[in-house]
Length: 365
Picture 1 (cartoon, rainbow, N blue to C red):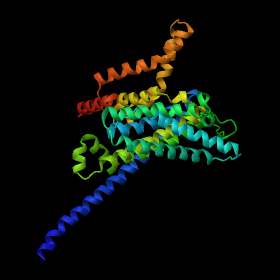
Picture 2 (cartoon, rainbow, N blue to C red; picture 1 turned 30 degrees about the horizontal axis):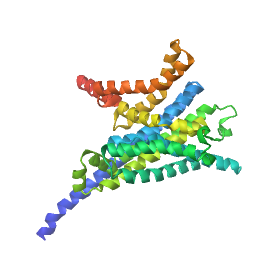
Picture 3 (tube, rainbow, N blue to C red; picture 1 turned 90 degrees about the vertical axis):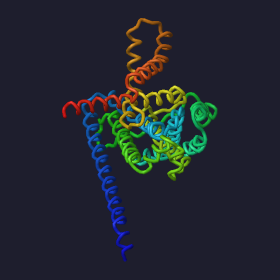
Picture 4 (spheres, rainbow, N blue to C red; picture 1 turned 180 degrees about the vertical axis):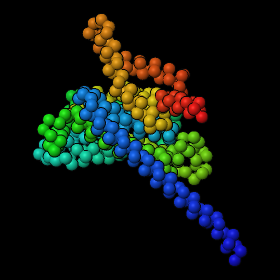
């Protein structure tokens, strides 16, 4: 009888801890939903306030944000280095293009076709990511980087090799239906693109934010910090690494599919090795391990080409030199920015902003 009474309090404590965890999960989910709704409303308002070209740029930022957020989860939270996310984006883009062309050839129309193509792009990229992830789980350091680098080189080359399917260097067109008639006959197409890309990206970020705050996010961090300790704690390290790679591949495929929708075309040149390097440098500059840092990286990916184009226009150069400079200048600026950020703010842009925010709160208190 006394033993039963002594065992009761620990059981009650476990029940209380479980209820506390459930309440925290519920509050975290509600907070993330509220943030997504607020950001979605802001995007709708901004889409009416800016010109069509800015809407297109914001939609491109949203597409890149899918890829940088997934890469942040893989590299920042799980510690796996990937140089092949441009190839994963190409997988999603080509899958969407093939699906949309197949629907168009059969005369199929309807608002449900594009979400179906986006789903197919995610599924195909998940399959590729699972294969690469299983291989990557057995490798470490430069060997892992070498495998993902090979993926970044091989996947775009397949589009040139099988030109009967992927149309070689010219690529494929992506037929996309116009905005719904319920929005009006003169509804700007760029605004509709921003709504599509923004909705898909916000949904992906909502899932990633809840994933990183869940048990899976904690196992990602545990494996990143110390694989031996994580294995001793009962975590299946290889399975966790494969899961992280699959999640990252899914968001990269979604980002590539959204880019194909925005450009209405897809070609191997749009997903070269340079894109994979840009993605990795973008998440490091933005703040590795933070989804908000992925946003800064996506903004840099869109803003940097415009800045370099404006810089080359200010210089009086021959067309050949200007074209060569415009092609190599973004990579050089990205590299210099990476060096400066790593020296001045090792935590990236978001880490610097967080540190400044803590100092301001400390001064106020």
